[in-house]
Amino acid sequence: MKLFLFFHFFGFGILVYFLVPQKSKAQSITNGSLIYNDFCYRCHGVNGVGRDNLIPPLKSSDYLLKNISLSIAGLKYGLKGEIIVNGKVYNGYMAYQGLDNEEIADVMNYILNQWGNNYEGFIDASQVEKIPKSIFEK
Amino acid sequence: MKKKIIHIVSLIILQFGCAQDNPPFIEDPLEINYSYEVIVDGIEVPWGMAFINKNELLVTEQSGTLYYVKNGQKKEVTGLPPVYFRGQGGLLDVAIHPNFSENKIIYMTLGADTEGDKKGGNTSLYSAVLNNTDLSNVSLLYKATPNTKTAQHWGSRIVFDEKGHVYFGIGDRGERETNPQDITKDGGKIYRLNLDGSIPNDNPFVGKSGAKTAIFSYGHRNPQGMIFHPKTGQIWEHEHGPRGGDEINIIKKGVNYGWPEITYGINYSGTIITNKTSAPNMAQPIYYWVPSIAPSGMAFSTSNIYEDWKDNLFVGSLKFQYLERLVIKNKKFVKREKILDNIGRVRDVAEGPDGYLYVAVEGKGILKIMPK
Image (cartoon, chains in turn purple, red):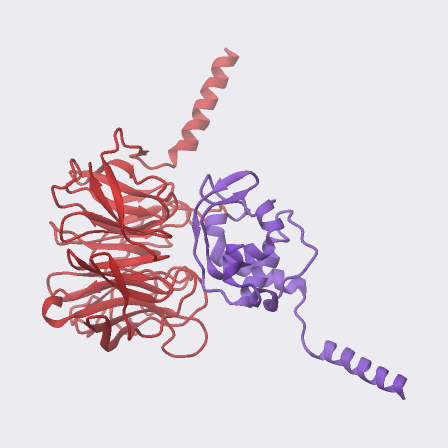
């Protein structure tokens, strides 16, 4: 009986997993590229290299790749003040763009896996949802 | 001999490389004879501002807050219509009615989804009556269609002429092949209304079948600077080009300014949009920027407060993060200079009733430029 119940719920779980549409990483990256090429490329560049001393790069950016939660917070609340990217100091201001959590997740997945950047994980809307503004104070 | 050839070849290459840049080239001032003080802080993206008098002004925060500021103290204005904030949209410009001292009417441009169709938003013009820090009689005077979720090109500045008209611009909303050249569609246009929002009988496309009759001029990309010229009474506008080709235009009734049929710019990716920089029946800019500075906000200095700055034009640069001073002599742009270099993204500039220049800077607030 126990075995029956176990398989019953296990089977149900598998069924739910396949019935509820899951967004694939590839789909999220595709959606993220549309967001990037509408909202971000003007400053960060089509190649993600940033510009001069004003706009930090996203390509091979240690700040981005090592501070994923802070980077998400930057998109969710805006990013202000000094940051150091690949040893260079930037002190600009990036405004919040009005993107929702799912769009932020998509564009993060895109920039984390573009221009040679490589991120094993996958960011979804619930992860974005959980990041509070107070993260900047840490 | 070989050396000489290499020398000549490299000169030719250099020539080609620089030929694109449009003079006069930007200069640093020889001497910095000004400073600044922050008069309003705590505003992240101060998109537009309007002076009521020398002590009172209105400032928009793009994400959707309107501030009333008196002697540097800011209060949130209540009663705003819903603001659709996304990308370059949101609460944009604010302006006071030419007869504000009697009727207390203000105008605002903002991203809106008045249809509630959840398909995004488009630029709208509202008027309202300001009672201290509360709005009443909020009226939607114009709403561009259709709604779209694209981040791009909402415009928008508001100006008045002396004949009872209000003008505002709307960008092409990222649909350059669809909107700017079609007078039956919104986007990529400068609009003219009577102060009550009705459409003037002598607007250029009144009576044209299917036309949006509020349109005053067309073929624009993304106008984020517009001003009533204090001396000539003309409407001056500037707009973002793509990569290169930001323009200053004098706005005339019914005129086509050419976007995207003619432009001095190219795509961000470096590909060509068109090889044409001019065409019959399409107006030329009075100045164009190559490379782009990403202009926002525009003002003339008309006072004698700053040495040598009288009658100069001031334009904010989002891209290079300075205020640009442009000297115009005999209708020619003869000098460009960086003011407040590295200050941050300059969103707006205005001459206050006291003759001082005020600059709205992202992440900083409103700055007042003080002569030394």
